[in-house]
Amino acid sequence: MTLPFLRLLKHEGTTAPNSLCSKSDRHLSHKKNKRFSPKFALLAAVSMLALNTARELCAEEYFSHYASSTDSAAIDLGIQPLGYPSGVISALMQRDQILKKALSESQQELKIYPFKRGADMLTMLANQRLEAGFLGDMPTILSAASGDVWIVGLLKQSFTSIIAKDTSQVRDLVGKRLAYIEASSAHHTLLQGLASAGIREGQVSLVPLTVDAMPEALARGEIDAFAAWEPGPTLALSQSERNHIVFRGISSDYFVIGKEFAKQSPQAALHLVASLLRAVEWLRRSQRHLETAAKWAMADAKAFSGKATTLSVAQISAITRREILDIPSAPNILKNPSAPPLKAEFLFLANLGKLPATANEQNLAAAFNYDGLSTVISDRKKFQIERYDYRE
Image 1 (cartoon, rainbow, N blue to C red):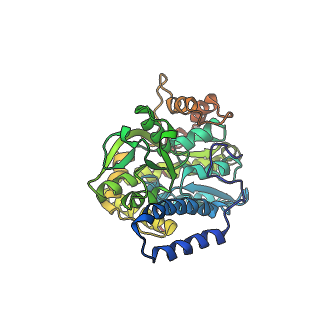
Image 2 (cartoon, rainbow, N blue to C red; image 1 turned 180 degrees about the vertical axis):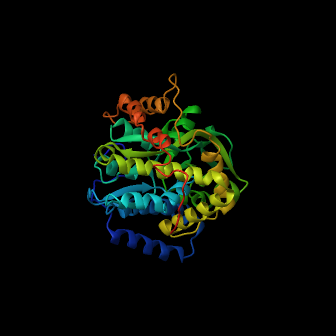
Image 3 (tube, rainbow, N blue to C red; image 1 turned 90 degrees about the vertical axis):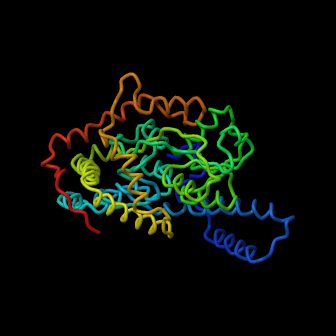
């Protein structure tokens, strides 16, 4: 299933040729070594933006080979190592020896696949190439409303921000270049921010970028603003006093599992849920645990992106504490009958025409009915919630 509004998602197996990507890079390198006259400066900037977009499209082939079959012996987990605190929790789950042992007893193994954004996981969750994933609120809505997944637990509850240079007002973004991640929680925040100022999408220039590329693009003047989750806002604010938060929207990340996976392998699904709960509880036990997990998360992000983060262990630890550990109920999802989780976001996106015709509000509500977390909590000894063994 390919969702029609995901413009950057290609049909499976269709990717930009490597030769096109490499030629574009070589062309840029050649240009960068030449001295530009002022009259060509604007053209150079536009060319750089176009190339960055092309790189995004080329880079999308990175996940085409992921979990290429529905092998029942493998439990395929999609993670987002470039975002925090999601990357901190996934760093622990993939090093959880208790989880690996529990799965091995049923001849199953855990396989980890890093993604740049949750939207890249949606087709793979729908066709059961992924059994579980870490998603922001907008991808969670899309997947759950299509009836593909159970929403298991909370990974983050915080503000996603729009960061702009040389302005502190959303209304000043008319005609500006705004970087975003298609079909993400930050995309949702961007839409909210524009709507709050009465700005239509057509009044701004939307630039697709990965979250890790945004602060640098803002610093180089290739964009005027961006919408992103942590660590993007923290990085941009620390880089320059000219950068300001112009809008904040409440956002959340979730751990989801495929409905078919939970049906076919209910015990394996529960062991995944137990690993999530174990990770959050271990992080809460001490600052030393949190710092260890932050270092692993930094290593995972560098291995995936090829570059080290400029955030410190202390900054990543602070983000993780603020956005998940200081939420007493987490990873439990508190349900308010008068305001069901994600309903307001669903209606907002539906009103803007950002949801496919197949998106169903009843499916979204039903996705919260999985009882895996309560099952694990009620039998803490069986699922070894208070035992910990994290190793490379």
